[in-house]
Every structure is written in C-alpha cells, then in structure tokens.
Image (cartoon, rainbow, N blue to C red; front, side, top):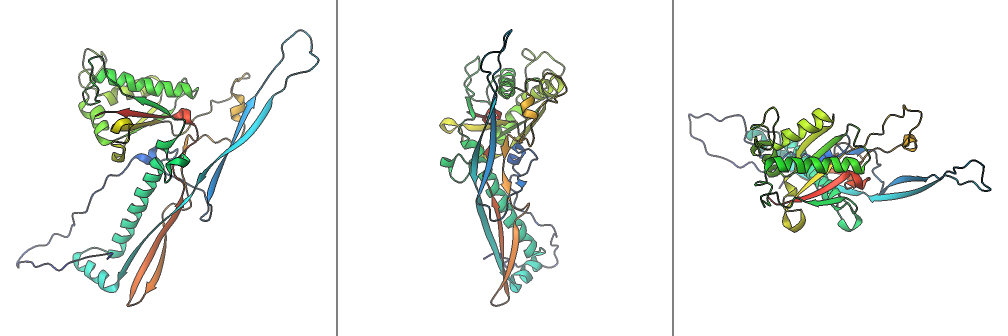
Length: 341
C-alpha cells in the first residue's frame, strides 16, 4: 500500500495541531565530492556505457652544438576508460480513496509519494556514487583501484581512535594528507578545493569536541580552536585553499578492519594559467580538457514521472532515471583514510 491514513478517535473539545512530525533522514553531503556538487546531466536515457578519452604525451629533445643524423620526436597516445550506466526505477500507486483519506490527515498524498520516491532515488544515487553497483568493475569512489589508502594509526601517546587522538597531532596529520595529495597532483602551489567526507561522529570529533590544546597550537584562538578550525585556518588563510567538511554515515565501518572510512578528495583540478612564455605544463592547456577528478552522470536532474491509470479509479506513477556510479578519473586526487573511532 502506498499510503495509509488510519482513522483516529479524538476527545471533544480538543485541538489538532496542523503541523505533522515528519520522519527525518540524514541529508548526505556525499555529492560535494563532485565538481558542481551534483551529478552531471549529460547522458541519454538509452546510453548503456559512458566512455572517457585520455591523452598522454612524451617529448624527447636533442641537445648539442650540431644536428644529429636523426632527431628525436614527441608523441601523443590516446586511450579510454568506461563506466556502465544503470536504470533506477520505483513507483507509487494509489486511488482516489487514498487521497481523500490523506486529506483528512492534512497532507497531500500525491506530494508525499513524489517526495518519498525522490528520496529513494537520491539515496540510491548516493550509494552508487560511493559504492557502485558492481565493485568488481571499479564502480564507486570507494572502489577506485588506484586511490591512495592510509590508516590513522596512533598518536605519540599511543591513542588509536580519532576520538582520543591528540587534537594538535590529528590536525597536522590531516593537513599532511591534504598537502601530500596536492603534491601528487602537482598543484601544491595552487589554490584548490578539498572535500573531507566522513561519518558524523568523525566530523563531530574534529569540529566540536577536538579542541586543540595550548601546548600544541600556539596561535590566536588557542584553547578554543578545534581540529577543523586549525585545518581551515592554515589551508584557507595561508594557502588560499577551500576546505569543506561533509557528512555521510554510510561510511561507518567501511574502512579497513571495520573502521570508519574518510574520503579526502579534490573534486576538480585547476590548470594553472599559461601566462608565462615558458610553461612546463603547457600540454595541459590543450582543449577540450576534462578537469574533473570525480564524475557521475545522469540523464535527468530529477526522476522522470510517468503516470498511468489503473482499474477502480487508481493511478500508478513510475519514477525512473538512468545514472552511472561514481567514477574517479584521477586516482592521485583521492585518498581513502581508515580511522578507528
């Protein structure tokens, strides 16, 4: 049954509050790991596979006071990767009797079912973004085969859980992961956006309860700044980076050995401006240039709704869309950190 509005017995005189206490679910921040914070609406509804082309170059030069008999040459080679697409389907079914009953309860059954189905699609998209459908196909960011993996380990006092780690040491450890990742991408000297996606309890530990001690953080705000504030102060204030902390509780227990999993990623890279006459990265300015680190594609921005009549005055509505799982295009821009609570 798509809607259920039972009869209730009330006492008169009485008052019935018009507001309804709705079920509340976590609004995941997982999609912030994508360049625009949402999947890219680009594929067709019938596309079964998405292909991404790659270009690699090698350049050899000769140095001497005279020309050799045979000059070395530059070469450009191409390749491609691919990602499957999947159809997501769900439906709602109701009759005019159901809508009347819901109206007695003070809500629109049509709107309630539409929002319910959209939430189901959104949760499925989140699962596909992080974990894919078939892990063997390297689907989902968590299953990226060449992503850098790390373990939190223990601090100088032997604490192994991020809740008990020394706050100053934890801040420096995370800053080191961010800087090392930017170094792998050869963008350490460039402003870049970084997203840290983790369970709520990890974000709570670094942003609320993990106050940096005076002895390890001798800066303005010492004794009140948290791990997260220290990271943002150094990354944003000194290096002009943009740090975002996002939450998703499905990452609980997804790390090595049942620990929590934290994703540290740069959603997209930035090709430095080629303003200098001599540029050792000038090949990267060739267009069209895919600058995304993580990608996900859908055929529509919101599920397509297809209503159909059914006997006895009812309506069934199909909600459908096609999407790819999460796809990491540049493994150097993704770190998977396993951390015990």
